[in-house]
Image (cartoon, rainbow, N blue to C red; front, top):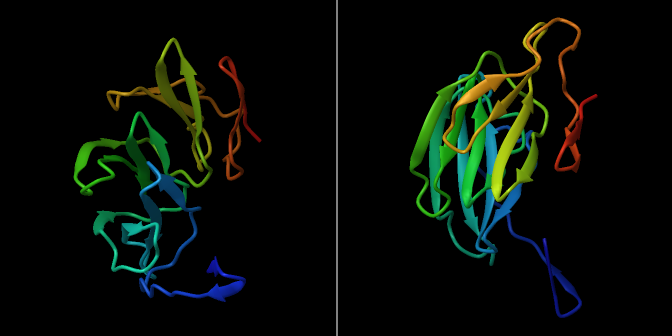
Length: 167
């Protein structure tokens, strides 16, 4: 929906996918929409021009469902599909890094930036898996790998460079 000269102009993209993750804007150029098929076997990442008047710029299918909101870190798109972290170039949709994760993720991750370097923090949607930190290189480090943390479905919140709230 777009407001134009006091009237509402509606456009519709029928992607044919279930959309659960929130949308994000990349570099004030593209709207990123993620979804998955009804069987939950594959996901899709779609880049739509912000004018909302053209066909999608690109679409990339990935294995697994996308339920966690993607994030933009250092100009790249971090998308979790099933148990896989995909770092995608937002201009053309090429996958830069593909990294297996210990479990699925449904919550929105938190981004912490310290000393000019950004880190993504994910909380998993499974018992006994906990929390993981993903460095810019795509390496994953479990930091709370014990069962005192129940599955996390709520979004993570960054308070400052040293604290993230997980519910």
